[in-house]
Image (tube, rainbow, N blue to C red; front, side):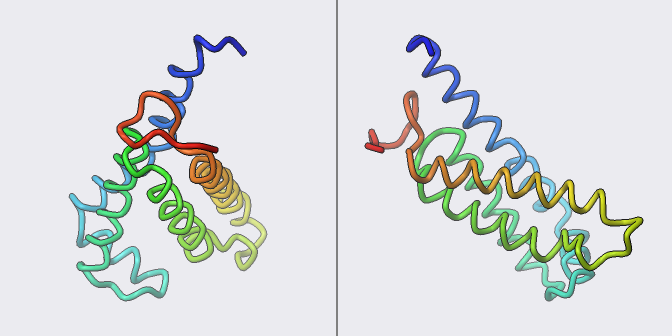
Amino acid sequence: MLDSLKTPLTVAGRILLALMFVLAGVGKLTNVGGTAAYMGSAGLPALPALAVLVGLIELLGGLAIATGFMARWAALALATFTLVASLIFHRYWSLPADQQMMQQLLFMKNMAVTGGMLVLAALGPGPASLGKPTRP
């Protein structure tokens, strides 16, 4: 690939990976009660403090990924978060057959995002980041 595309593709990739977390974090923080209730419906404690914590993890982690600041740590945190959330909220294997398809798609999307975060954690944020230069 042309070296001239490395920087814009890396920045675009980081922003696209971060976007779902930033938007989800803002959504949770602006609807703490609804988020807590949804978490409660999945068997988690329906605590506003937990909803705020999750919203902050998503928002701050997403911003770290987008900017490249502490991106490796943020990627590890978001990979772990995404994996755990998928196992709790997208349990397609335990649903009736007519309800499995959508939850399986959401689960597999999250596994792909988790994979992207693990690659980012391993290789670092790349060029045009606010973090220290990283070695693979």
